[in-house]
Amino acid sequence: YGEKGKVIIQSTIFSMFNHEQISNEAFAPLDFKVYIEYYLIPWVAIQLISKDLECSLEEAYEEMIASTDSGVSLHSMTEEDSCIERITCQHCVTAAEKRVEKVERFRKEMND
Image 1 (cartoon, rainbow, N blue to C red):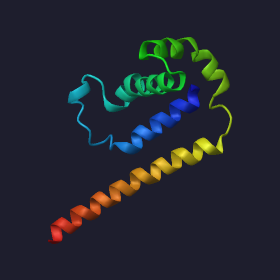
Image 2: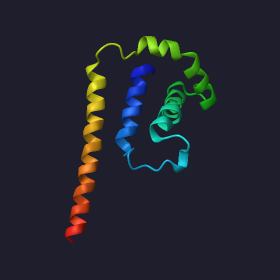
Image 3: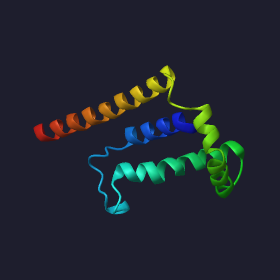
């Protein structure tokens, strides 16, 4: 999936979790950003490759490693890509909306 796939996976993960409030205890000594970079992104990519190629996770991992250079060449982030930009912007909006909802629930609880 190359760099573009990595950006989409990373953006999706960040939109799902408030990384500022996640405890690092589960993946210490790593912080959340490092955990995402070196564990979650590859894990999601392997899951997607396995499903796309209808192969085992081990085979998907081997394919990911073997095709890394191709992915970077074919799906690099060196060129502007409005589709990627729209996806990441939407993830930012979604994450912001979740935070606003949380604040509104907190305010409501405080007023009740």
